Length: 450
Ligand code: HSE
View 1 (cartoon, rainbow, N blue to C red):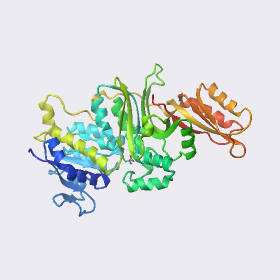
View 2 (cartoon, rainbow, N blue to C red):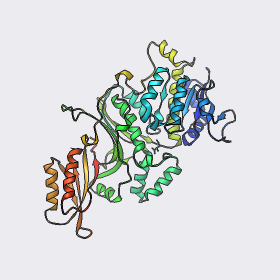
View 3 (tube, rainbow, N blue to C red):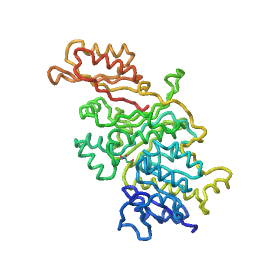
View 4 (tube, helix red, strand yellow):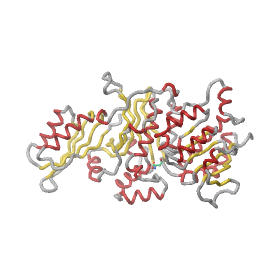
């Protein structure tokens, strides 16, 4: 067998430990598939671990590992956007290929990191950064390369999906389910990243760049989490044939009117039809639905978090790099030898071909809506509300009025067809000014996924 490939694992948390376990469990498969022996030479860890094979050097100087002669590929799984960034930059500058699961780092600094990698002829692979074990990055960068992508919608945070599923199915409390997700190693170090939608926004920024060939623009992702979702709304949605899921959307809007043409990047709770496949993806599972031309809709589903799923994605990247490195261990020379490049561009499009299509602001985005209006049960209230909506050009799709439950107030649930958010904002402002309306209007976006 040819020269061994030497791997360094930086970080021995859930994912790093999962990678070591995977290599131990599946070494034979890895060797037979890559034609190379893959050995972990060094691990970066702050405290010495006695459960690690003694042939592996444990070192708390991660920077030294990132430039060690004893390492071909650096696997960064410490997370965070400061030290991890310095580490990856150091590894790239020292000619190391990098595999990372760090979505926050790529979403926020990926443009700089990928440019640096190109300049140094090394690869930064990141399958594990989005949707855990689902090979969605490979699908989008390679398998769908001939398609024009119109939109994608995804459940891309396992913790959030786990919480919503357990609350709905078992009536468990938010806090109880979140604690379990943390114990199982699904949640981020700071779980507000999961429940406030930030983790999903990081992943959406990455998916959108690959889908549309645009630079990474995390700062332009509209982001709402799941903390405001009540059981009451979950139940009303179900009664109307919908299910609330926390989704990320990347949508290309082509329009003759240049003001409304652009890309929507948004993460928010969304009512989707109960019979949609995405509505039935539960627990820690993630799923990404991609609508592309000419292929049509395809759905990718699997575990989106956890040691095994993430290690699977990390090692798939390692295997790709092992093949690119070839028997002589020189990716650049191998690319040149074939007078082309085996290397798929980091964001799937040639770096000089990235487009500056604008990202739409929230007020310019178009979605259907679920509205819950609380009003006194006076004659004409419903007529007033529907008149305001129709005057704003908003088409009502369904209405549900429950019997008055306290002090003569009724919850009125309205589903609308897609409308530009700005129009909806103005209509809601008017509805809230009606004398009979007692509370702020609750709104949740709705998408038929067609
Ligand atoms: N906290 C993330 C999730 C882990 O729950 O999906 C995987 O990125």
